[in-house]
Amino acid sequence: MLRAAPRLYLVHHQGVGYDNIDITACRRAGVPVALTPEGTTIGVAEHTLLLILAIYKHLREVDPAVRAGTWPVWEYRSRSFELAGKTLGLIGFGRIGREVAKRARAFDAAAIYYDPFPAPPEIEHALSARRAPLDELLAQADIVSLHLPLSSQTHHILGERELRLMRPHAVLINTARGPLVDEAALAAALASKRIAAAGLDVLEREPPDPDNPLFKLDSVLLTPHIAAGTADAFRTKMRAIAANLHRVLKGEPPHNVVPESVT
Image 1: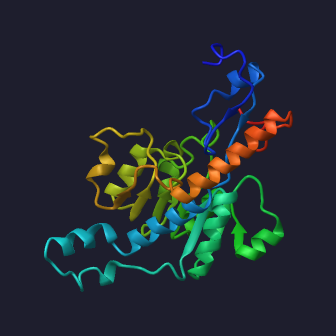
Image 2: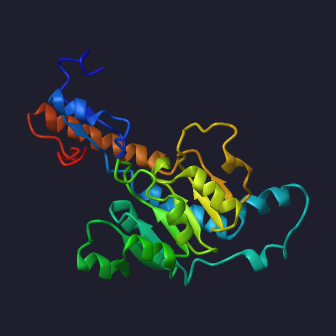
């Protein structure tokens, strides 16, 4: 496609996940790749909390039960939980991870995070978030939530070994990219009750195969990669892209270019 477009001088992605763009080929062609962090943060942070609360209150089970004519007012009380007092482990503490921590604080939940790059002390203080090694985070968190880009370094950052470090009552949330998690290992961990549940907006293959083993597990809550997909986000992103295109047409460098260090 790049060879077929010799006059191309910008590739602009409407989101922030550039794993479906050939960054190396764009660099060879001298074409910058710009991303759109505007509009992709709030919806994902809210969706993360949505999945946590839906799992904690068994929304997937109780809504169909009520519609079927039953009234399970007592059955779920001993298996439902509050977010208050829980420890939320954030793997990745960029824009979205910080917005999740901000919202979790409003629910009186504690936050620890793993990120190769520490947040400034004032950010940690404002969000009451503590940086920890990945293994420590996995061993301490009641909820583990992924907020990383997909790269060769982060592919399957959660595999069988890492899932074994999580607590038996822990919940895994992934609103980032499916291949961050070894899906087969996750299905095995859930089936054997090594961890309690998972809320997934993304999968390793999208759309997934109909025989995906996660579909057979009642402890999994699934949404179809819609965390950032809101009308509010779309308007914000389109305004940001238009401003960036206008910037380039004036001969100025675009904002939010994928950095040279990314491979």
